[in-house]
Image 1 (cartoon, rainbow, N blue to C red):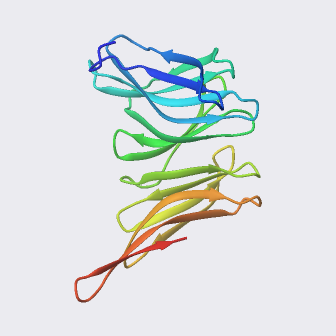
Image 2 (cartoon, one colour; image 1 turned 120 degrees about the horizontal axis):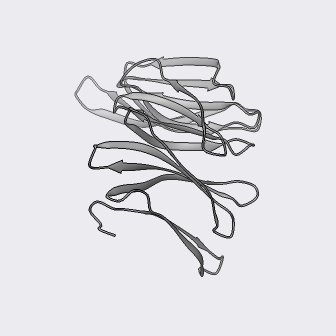
Length: 212
């Protein structure tokens, strides 16, 4: 395909010996660019991919959901389209194979989408403030969703139920700059975040520190 305006999503499965087992390609609309952003595998070996599809003709990006069986057979492909510009960034799966996706809408609105295993939108949730960037997402062992968002001088850590109801939300504002980069959960469902902070000194120098 034309590399400038017709990019496809390619998925390759390799054996433990490095042999190519299969190659699958998703080609959407003509003159559209499809790009993967994240990939997950469930306990049965099924492969889930979330990506974006961008159409130059209307200057618009939408979400594409893809599933393959362990043997590389296409099990599901769905494109979520509405009037907004959707830019997915990361996702996790729950026990049912439902997708929880974080990303941006219309460039500056942070958003969480939940899609069913079959690719149907179940609900979406806009983060409270504009210019909030979602950083990471985790599915906890007790079935909840942890999310970290970031602004210029603060970050917010939140825990949501599978239906999108807020369990807690805490903003942390510091006198120094902080960048949270990753989020995970322990076996009890507690959330652990890590990142870096930059502290300005009176002499104009600064120290970069790792925090957890």
